[in-house]
Image (cartoon, rainbow, N blue to C red; front, side, top):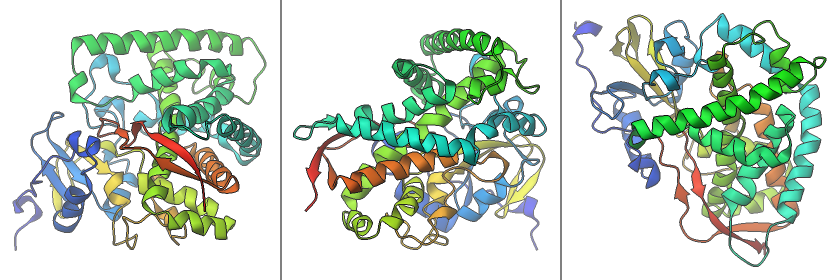
Amino acid sequence: MATLAEHPKAIAPFDVSDIALYVEDTWREPFARLRAEMPVSWCPESPYGGYWSVVSHALVGEVELDPATYSSSWRNGNIVIADPKPESNLQNFIASDPPVHTEQRKVIAPAFAPSQMSLREVEVRARCAELLDALPTSETFDWVERVSVPMTLSMLCILFDMPFDEWEDLKRWSDVASTVNPENNTDEYRAYFMGQMMEMLGRFDTLYAEKKAQPPADDLISRMVHSAAMGDMTPLERLSNLALLIVGGNDTTRNSMSGLVEALNRYPEELDKLHGDAALIANAAQEIVRWQSPVTHMRRTATRDAELGGQRIATGEKVVMWYLSANRDEAVFADAERFDVARANARRHLGFGHGIHRCVGARLAEIQLATLIGEIVARNWRIAPQGAPERLPSPFLHGFVHMPARIERRG
């Protein structure tokens, strides 16, 4: 009987990190084939080097629940498929392992406690209504620019206690910090990256100093500067954690908000269900995170030899968890491609991650999504796409650059 070490490596027949799959929206068939034939497979060549793909719901969960074997630490390679250059190797709490991760996460978590979320929900509802009230009702507009981006970034301004008119700066810094694209592997782009990150750090260091001089408060920056775990970070650590909070606090939610338009257009009967039963709105918010899967992947690095899905993972190898595939796993989600607002197990999605690294702001994202869905239903709107959207050229975030749309009255 062959030992695991003697088993041949399952070699993937294609590279699922190819950005064309996401720009052209052709990723479904490759992942379906991998789930069926080789749920753990090795891609020997890609713009990011060799990597393991983990594509089933169960095996992604297995990796997530074993941080001792599968490290997130920036010291081992960080959390995306691209191997970071020294200047972009961000040292934030998601790119760390316990105990550092545990200590720093504890500082951030109270900002998303139930009592805080009750306050945020009131602010989300007011901001959502304001944005939707300002939309043109008889002409085409960009849903990403007019709704998804300003809604999520204005909430970040509240969390940071920053003026609303700075949301465009936050967007630019977020877009730069979250870029994963082989075409940006140039000296020119790296210089631009560092320029933007230093600009971000300068703005927030001013805010840090202001908060340090004031009594502790509930906003994120105050919690950080007045904590033992994050109050004395190096400039790179400050920059890194700010980049994480900005990206995590808006990119995933904004891309789910844009994906909602696409999902309801493909499955218009789901909007009818929401009109028939408003109690489904909260579940619809979970379902759009599953269906859109706004974070395409997260990467881990093996700290020791391991077995996963019948494959031998060697120390130091890159292990990529494809949430986009896990959330389409028919073994968990029946008729998985379908957007179903009444899906009984929508909450089993991995769109927010799993285990110790599950998104700390998941509840706020759910509130924002449910509020937007509720407003669309209450206004009796149908958001009709006007032509194909422009999709994000990235294997890391699954989202949209532009989405032309018009408001139509339902029925």
